[in-house]
Length: 402
Image 1 (cartoon, rainbow, N blue to C red):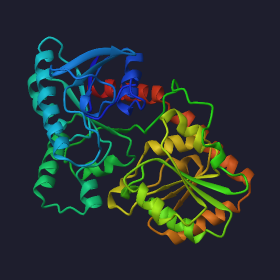
Image 2 (cartoon, helix red, strand yellow; image 1 turned 180 degrees about the vertical axis):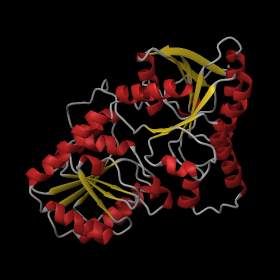
Image 3 (cartoon, rainbow, N blue to C red; image 1 turned 90 degrees about the vertical axis):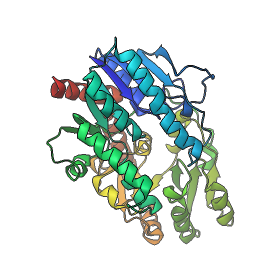
């Protein structure tokens, strides 16, 4: 079976953070598939410039097709980013048309983001007669409407909504790490559809460093609470540190590992709290050895209606692999952490409740917390290996497209 997996923001293992799409592609290859991963040069970190529409190479059995485009240094909004979306679709269309004449794919998986690929793959499906499989990793444009308070009547939102609906109507199958995406799809589709949830996962071939450069930041005389990841407005680190201020007279240390646009402001705002420590970002291979030194890991979300369908962030995989208990401030559909019995959920956007819960957890028996952390690690090892997830998805696609 010849599969093309299209995702503008995918990354191979030649970069430090191989993406979900690459991991699933590797798993498809092990199942005997002829797999091409098609992604953009724009998000690359190591690529040399070139003048063709695309370049092809094979890495770890995966046929990698890198579509040309401008390199983007920032993940923020910019006209260059918008330009890169449309240029990707143009150059991808050229690749698809020139290659499909002799090498027609049986299946094309199109992964959000970018939503524009829904249109490209949907239109060309009529010509090349492949099955179209849609992967929804983030529900757009609903997420941006809620996060950015953008009107449904906004022209750009109307355009994205039309693209979303077009892609869903053209799709033959759906999969997503979002547990209840099928419930969302029923609000969009009148036709029957097939869906499978494929959570985020880990690659058992990934080698993690055994040393921890920040080990001294975790003081055994304190209860060490750690957050690892981006430090932006949507990560609600300000709320976590507000909770830290409420606990500043306790032997509880708050460690923030990562980078982001809010970091400098937060360092300045909380500079008088000696129980708050900021650490620089590290490579993916170093994250788990560092956060495994914590007593509790935290993750905060906002109150968005879209979370009623659930979430499945990469962060939870890393957190659970660390073997530490987890505290999540979140009002949406609960999964993974409650299934594994490895942590706690509390109401979102309530620093006072967050502080009270952290204090209560810090007073729990350490042996009980250790058991909870190990529960999470075992659950991920048993359920979230990309080799097994890819095999599960491969069988689903085969059975439903034959």
